Length: 366
Image 1 (tube, rainbow, N blue to C red):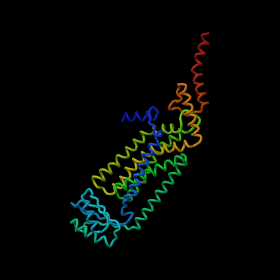
Image 2: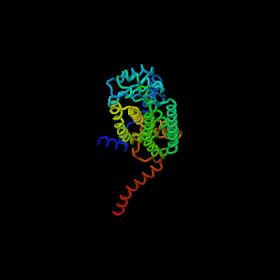
Image 3: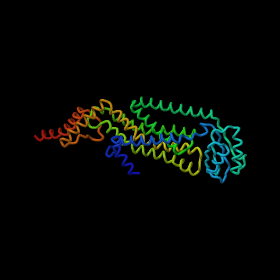
């Protein structure tokens, strides 16, 4: 941990760093590939909607020796619909069947009891109507759209529209990957999934806003100097918050991984799977997008501005001239951007202060 802390301090001071922004085309390519994979998985397999969205019935059996696959076969034979069964930690089985009405559920319960060799009175049945599920779905979409609009408005006011656009692209990237993973894995989409998705959007924005705050401070007066381009300044800000972002993400992922792999996988804790998978994938995707998508995209948008293009030309021209003379055109990594006149005045003041005592001493000797 001490080595990680030392690395973080060096990254913050600019003593070491990785060129994330300079290699942004690589990250864009990786992100596009992952996003296409998620979209293809979503188009081919589709989402497995829970009964809260499509209506249906949930049957919970008492403790039984039958497996989840055997319960699915029995439920399919009894209802004529596809069923999803999950073995819970206490030995009971949770069976979800979509498109089942109240009149048919009683007969399904009897058939399930017969096939699974349990008492029909011990099977608990919960029914959900399709109209209620449609209401939940509409509210979920409304909440997501309102969240996106408020985020864009806030970031546009607090920072600028380019940063707001970059953050929005990163959020859509995270949502697409998470939904695509859900389609590929085949987990049910439940209200718990929606809660998880809305939660990860906040985590995704956290790291992004931290980096954007550094960009906002670093770009003050940047066009009045000729030491660094906007992309280089953005890369330094990103490196300065890199270890903090990694630490925050790892600390958040550890308990979520416990819910997903232990609570959901070992104990078979139903809805924990729905929430924990969306949180786990979303947190990882959010950390990735804040580093590899949001900041490089801001740099691209900013460097399309005329003043930033002119700055880049001046910086490159100064470096080329310095290279021709065998000198270095780079200033201190932690220097505050100043214009050339300020640099000259500051340099002259320092030199004058250093020379004055020697002249005074010579005068006294005479």
